[in-house]
Length: 121
Image 1: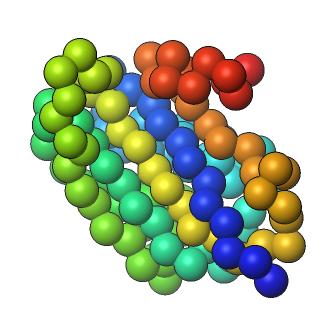
Image 2: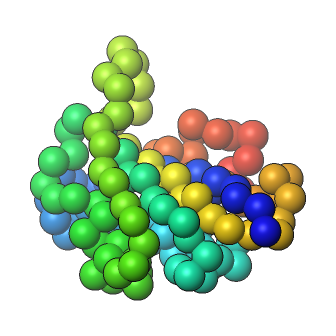
Image 3: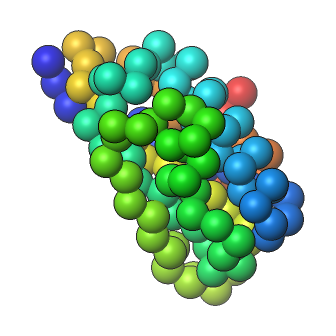
């Protein structure tokens, strides 16, 4: 079994609990679904948000709505870089898998799609 990372990012519509929850749930569902990952396969998850998102912890919603009760998780603030995308939520899932690195599908939704135009659908 190998350890691989799955990256994902999206933008949050508003800095409120509902918008953060919706962004987390939508992004995780895409990341897990496109990569055929079960929560049991996840070693840990890292969530980052830009400084304009502080309504709640993204990991809280992963635990409550996505079955991450036993997944170790941490939330961090992104670096503030001039001109960087605003209202952005990023997730890094570290998974145990037999997939090759090239088989991993990274997910970029909404305004975050411009971060990786080379791989967005």
